[in-house]
Image (cartoon, rainbow, N blue to C red):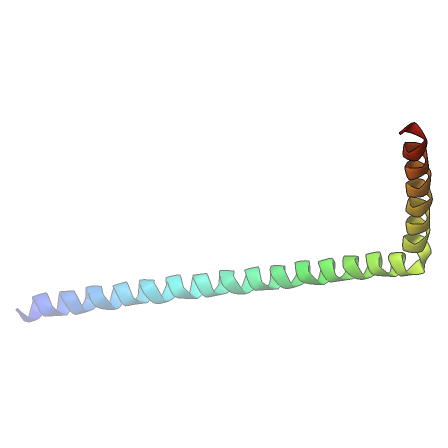
Length: 82
């Protein structure tokens, strides 16, 4: 009976070791994924900052003025057609 209990305890120890190793592997992958997400977030932030600086530099005002002129011309043409 002692041999059976010793074998069971050995198997339980091996099983717990495998579970701990699997948990460590998952934790390492989660850490790597978190680092990758951080890099992506940094890149997206820098891209948004670049777009914002471009829009603040005058392109948005020029685009708005162009849209206003086009809308005025379009509404003027529609008024004559009707």
